Length: 210
Image 1 (spheres, rainbow, N blue to C red):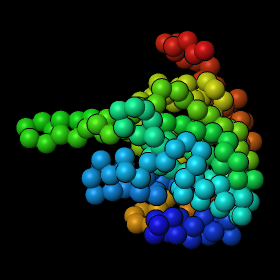
Image 2: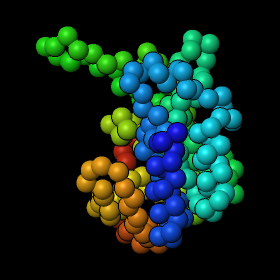
Image 3: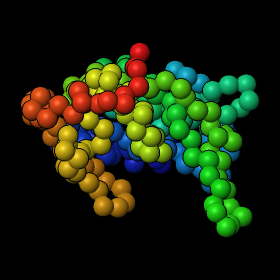
Image 4: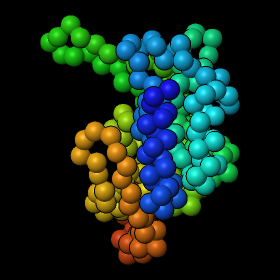
């Protein structure tokens, strides 16, 4: 697939720039002309061209890879999971997160609607994974609008989400189009700031997290 070849190029660039963990975007392997196309290319959990590519590339480059999302078969109704898979530098799968929040909207004043849930089954379980750059909480696109998910992730020990630091400063960005961006994450400095400015300990209306 052309998309996997493009991903390979950027993953090799990231590895060549001494990255230890690379993150691919949502739908990196397949977008489709229609939402229903996801059903046609969906893989079984644990086997398929996309999963094999991620595992083999992580092992070859000795690089941890967060595989954006790919469609995995999810149930009897034919919908798929928008699954974010993480592979370690040995090519072994270290985590799976299924996108929890699906984009279902009606455009006010227009006969226009979008139903991601028509072809995607929502996940229900937050996921964190220990990586060489820290404990990573997994989320996808629309998830960012739901702070309760990130409360769960921080309570589970997650360190960073985007390539942004603990003050919300963007460390690196790609303005548009395709490419590879790399930034350093300073976990020691983050720990120091959290100790000096313990906002996470000051929560009053926090929910109980199991």
